[in-house]
Image (cartoon, rainbow, N blue to C red; front, side, top):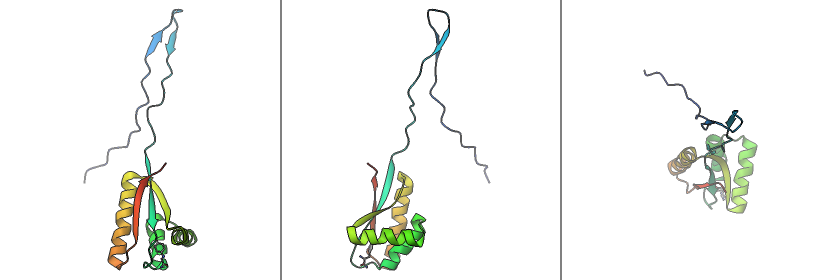
Length: 119
Ligand code: TYC
C-alpha cells in the first residue's frame, strides 16, 4: 500500500527585502492572500409525509447532532418550512445532501435537502 505524503500548509506570501536610502533592509508588509473557503449550509425542507422520527434519526446520523439538538432542528423545519442542519465545505455539504436523499429514497420518504452558499 502506498504511504500517504504529509500534508504541508500553504506557503506564506513571499516578502522581498529591499534597501532604503539609509542602507538598512526593509521588509514590505504584504496583505494575506489565503482566504478561508466558501462554506455551504445544508438546508432541510419540510414536507407533509416524512415521519418526524425519521428526520430526527437522519439529523443525528449525518449531522452528528445529539437527540435533543436533532429534535429541535426537526421541529424548527416542521414549523418554519426549512432549517439548517450543518455548515461545511462545498464537497462535504454535497456529500451530506446525497446521503440524506439516498436514505430518504431507500425508506420511501419524500424528504428533501439542498446545499447553499453561506451569506
Ligand atoms: N412535517 C412532517 C410531519 O408532520 C415532519 C417533517 C419535519 C418532515 C422535518 C420533513 O424536514 C422535515 N410528519
